[in-house]
Figure 1 (cartoon, rainbow, N blue to C red):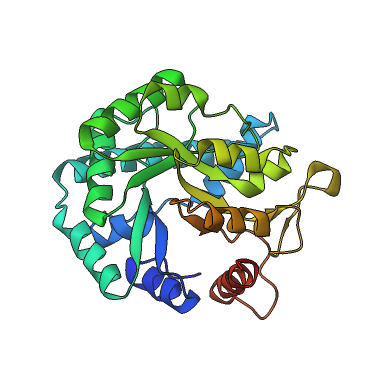
Figure 2 (figure 1 turned 90 degrees about the vertical axis):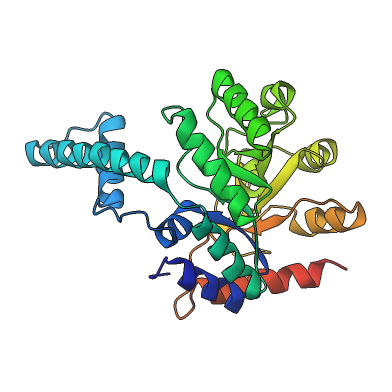
Length: 286
């Protein structure tokens, strides 16, 4: 959707019929006063991806990428300085604004938890999450045991949990080391990616780890044999009815996040498609 402000995001959420969310850093941090970046992240990602794949960049592309990287480094310093002085009451105000509209924030995902982030950055993200009312923060699993141990320790210190997200690298034992390191470490499980990775033991994984699943992303992807596509709900191979019915029957406490990643049909928009996903949930939870 075009407007990614906290106010617009809240409007999209309420129009979708959702009453609890995992909130990305952008809307919350802009609301709290973070100076806006002028970097074209999409273009930077395109050029960076081309370089990582070993594809030759033209002289102009090389210059463009270098300038973007320098701008990103300078902006990172601006962000770090802002985070040191941030007024957490702004996050509390956002929490109240959402709560007054009937929406709770159960997870927060700012770009503050990477391996290159300082302990101060990480502490900021965790404090902001608490001010928003979240029970946990989320990030991509770093594939670095020292870093998951560090995050677990800081989560324990700040009394907030850490949910690690995975894509097609997820396996039944993917989170075992992080879970063993600290009780604050847990799963931000992605059911669709797990199916696309070719695994058939998802229900067993959910049953085993349900107490350590802090939140779960839901999308309807296909198996590798069927092309791994990301389809409208009910058209892929993710066992959505079984997941939702197991959550209800076993009284699992973690939320399942509608993650809209399939192609939005012509004439529709993200709000209408999330409404469609929510209606699918209502029909299969019987």
